Length: 186
Image 1 (cartoon, helix red, strand yellow):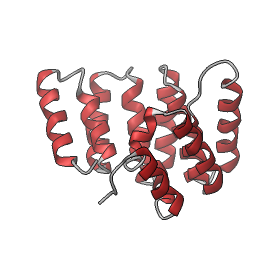
Image 2: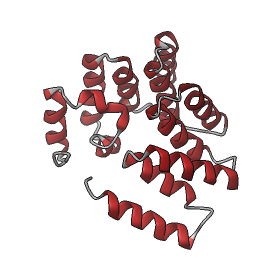
Image 3: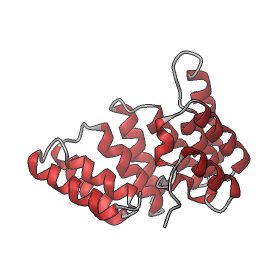
Image 4: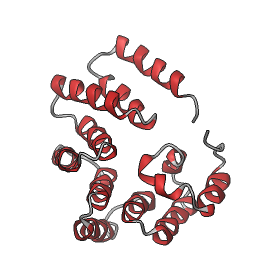
């Protein structure tokens, strides 16, 4: 948090050690540091090396959402799911639908995740990101507070997760950030 240059430098060092295995890592760091064009370039390069890694498609989809390239984002996230992506990938697909104005599809993803939660664990944080994308702040905070009650590790991304940007101006965001123990973003 707030040490973007160090994170990028570490990811680049890792890439020198293991170019294939850590290629996507640098791409994900670019996503978390909100460098969308660099993320897209890095992740597309990583996909060229290994098109079957769901992780690359997942973060590429997230970067595309931020660039407003919604058809590409949705296609990348669907590809990540087909390659074995997690419920977190489903949440990003729901968020992409919401951000692109496809409310009905976003709601279907929420319903699917709720049904899935009967049989397996679905992190409340993942449902919160879809509600954030829909602009339903009250629901997003309900689910983020559930994540806090569960002590979800995903809350460590709270201040850098671009899918939650529209919540930053809400006083409940700072209150939650403080409870989690994260510094004030710069």
